[in-house]
Length: 274
Picture 1 (cartoon, rainbow, N blue to C red):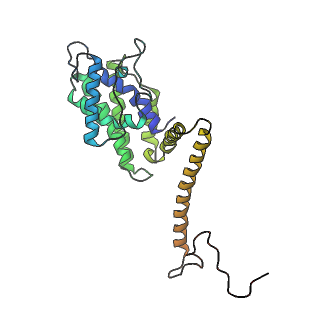
Picture 2: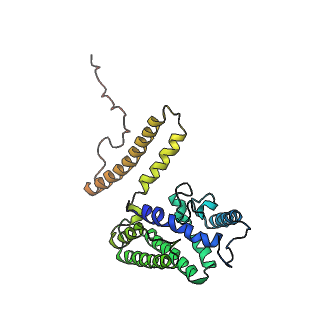
Picture 3: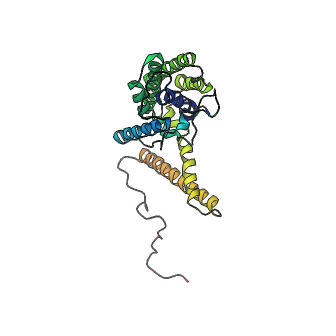
């Protein structure tokens, strides 16, 4: 899918996070690790504590539960590590980017360290350029800024793939990200499929709280109620705006406007019908 979440977070960040953390947690040669600990597991625990402290101070939620050795250990020798939804959800991985940039800037030794910091910094600025736009449409200056940050980030990723090809690789989602950056006229943070992905999580939580025999029905009932409430709120706003536009100046409210819905009309006093 070529939306911002599946392209940037689940397509690129899931692959570059392990490549960034490997030299910080499992350094080669005489390079010192970024976190204290005699083993990789202890360094991962120290990294988790530092990340959680950053989250508490910055108020960034949701967060990743823990950083484990599986983040930097490949399943097969010679293959790069790729994170999955079991390691962290898309929103948590996106919120993790400022902390990882802070760690990389503190340990930016050598050419690879400088390129790592440049890559994460430009991706963060690209995401911030979209988040800073409140409306649905992108102003020209915001689109140019996002495209510039995207180009700088992918150039750093290309240099890293040449410098350390066993750990860094260019993915097809990187090309898809350029189409979003250069061709999108609407804000990806507003128009892409975040509400649909959020519904998947809500349906999963509802299913887990219901009995197995009634879970399907309860999930569908909650979906119908949620869709009805959201649609009715939008229709009420639209009808009020149209009524205000069409009503003449100084016009009084129509008859029966103050009567509650479902209330019976009062019968006129007089002879009762048979």
